[in-house]
Length: 349
Image (cartoon, rainbow, N blue to C red; front, side, top):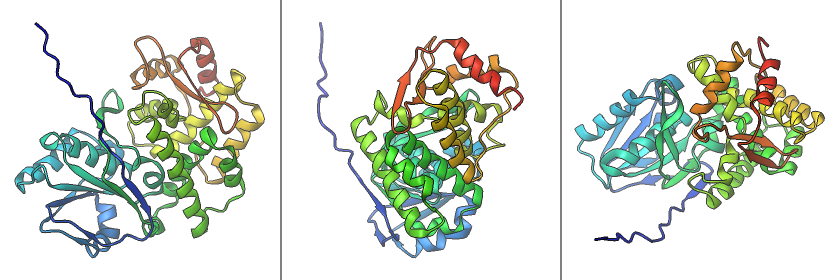
């Protein structure tokens, strides 16, 4: 006997991204704001002045990638249970990419899924992490290996929050902007080469162009079964670096910058990119004082860690490589010897 469960249906996960001064937010349901001490100290009053809800709980998590773990998720969930939240309640992610990922993941599993919105406070989160519905946490095996796709109901990217960003945090966001330009928009990359992102209106344009690029990709491939994987350019190498340094040495965007340079080195080796193009990308990253090299201590161990990447198979590694500037290639057919040659060039760098 066979019984079929017919679940074929269309679900609209569309939402809007507001790149502007934060408007007044009014909700007729319980709300919990998830944040960290740094963001809370700088901006929580600014948000609360614009927020109205019958109940507002504040969940403050430690600041940093190393706290993106089960313990933090349990802190969020415990608060929700103790405050008797339910399926109609709402979470607000108020912070950078780490807070956004954890809040979204908690929202995806609390009572099998509740709504959340993103209010990103870092450049990296505004241009990348807050858009697309990827949520998750890290574990001992790697980055974002536990998680879910859970789209926010809305994203509010207020430029006000970027005014207090430390220089390194700002540069980390620039790395994600460069990532999208190199893989999807040669004209955008050329614009970035001469743009002064310290100017408010120029930065706003860069944020908008980055968000439009990512939104277009996510609309075509929400669950990362094809094209969306291209947004991981720089991340395949970068995630290994984060793993090796226990998330304590570099910011995420800094490892993406190094990862792009390493990926470009491999792309040049394979004839996908010219040395001049790779140098242009490197120069743009260096302009914002982003790191562009990493001392690989053990190339063989580094290579083995690639297999912990979510995109890799049992015996294949998926690499995201630029095809010149403005194009991208997703491949899992690169010989180990070619990859090892690149890693050897970075040994002890």
